[in-house]
Image (tube, protein in one colour):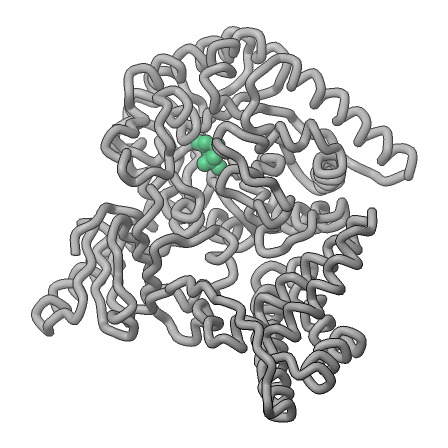
Length: 532
Ligand code: PEP
Ligand code: MG
C-alpha cells in the first residue's frame, strides 16, 4: 500500500490495528441481578489492573507526578461511596451494569464539577474517565491501545496523548491515515526515532498480520514473502551501518569547509530526548516542547512539577544551554489538560501564548519553574505564537510578577535569557521592532509555513502544497535574520526545515546562527554542514 513518508526508516513486525470503538449505552432492567453484579465486579477489577499498569509505565517514563492521574482513578474505582451507589443501582433497582455505572458516575460528576475548586473539578474529570473506562469494558469496546508486545501500530488517527501512553519499546513503527510530517504526533514519534508511513488505511482485518513498513519509500507491505523480507532486512542492516558511520561525527565541530560555524542544537520533548541529544553530541537544546511533558494527564502542572521536570533536564545536559518553550497548548495539543472548548478554527484559536496571557494560573507557575531551574544551569525561556509588541510587553510584566513572588517567598532562581518564536508572518514582519525587546529569535518554520501559505500543516490532502521552501517563507526568514542581526541578537531555526538538507546552504548563507533538529538528525545534519 502506497502512502507518504512520515519518518524515513524501516521496520518489520506484527500489525496492531487500533480502531477507536464507539459504544452505545443500553439502559435495560435485568432479571439476574447477582450475575450483573459479577459482571460489574469483573469490569472494575480489569479497570484497576489496566490503570495500575498505566501508572507503572508513566511513572517509569515520565515520573510519579505525571503518573498521579492513574493512581487517582484507581482510588475512585476502590472508593466505597462510588461503588455503593453502583451496586445499589444493580441490586435494588435491577439496572444493567453500564446503566448503573453511567447513572452513578453522572451523580458524582455533577456533585464535584459544580464546585469552584480546580482540584475538585479535576476529580470530576477523573470520574468521567473512570466511567468511560468501565463502560468500554462492559460493552467490550475497551483495550484497543493495550499493547503488550512490539508492534507496528496502524490507526486512522493518533493523538499525542495516546502516543505518549505507549511504551517506546512496544512501537516498531506507525502507520497513520491522517496527519502530516508537520503534525505534532508525527514530530513526537520522530523525536524518538520511530519509522512512520502516512496516508495509508489499514483495515481491522489485518490485525496481527506481518508487515514491512518502508518509511523511506512511504509504503507498507502486508504478509510479505521471504524474498521481500530479506531485501528489507538488508536495508535495516544498512541503516544500522550508516548510523554507526555517523558516529564519527561525534566530537567534530559543526563548521562548513569554508569555515562558517553553525551551532547545532536539539529539539526535545522530555527527559529521554535530552539523554539522546547528549548522546548524539548536541551543543545544546534549542527547543524544549514543554507541553509534551504534561500531555498524558488532565490537570495543569504545579510550579513544583515544572521546576523538577526542568531541573532534571538541566542536570542531564551538563552545562549545555537549554531553551524551554512555554506551554504551546491548544490546536492539536493538550485539549484534555485545559478542558478547552471546541473551536471552529483551532489552529487560529485560543492557543500557546494566548492561553498564557489570558490565564495567569497557567503561565506564572511555569515561569517560576523555569526561573528556579535556571539556578542550576544555562537556561533560556522562549514564547510561542507571538504576533505583537504588546504581547511581549505583557510577558515582561508577568515575568516580573513571577520573580517578585519568588523573592517574596525567599526561593532562589537564576537569570534566564528570553526569546520568542517567529512563527507567524506578523512576527516576522515586525521583527525589527521585536528584536530590540528580546535576547534571541527562534524561527518556527512549521507554523510560519502554515500561516504564510494559509495551509493547514496537518492536512494530508494538502501535503503537496505545503512547502517550507516557498519563496515567501524564505523572504520572511531572511528579513527576520537581518533584523535580528541589526539588533545584535542571534537566530535559530527550530522548525523541521532545519533538518532538511535541501535548505541548509540557503539558511546558512542567510546568516542563521543555529539549527535545532530532532536528536536523531543531529549527526546527519553535522555531516551535511561539514560537507558544504
Ligand atoms: C514550528 O512551528 O516550527 C515549531 C518549531 O513549533 P511546533 O512544531 O511545536 O509548533
Ligand atoms: Mg509552532
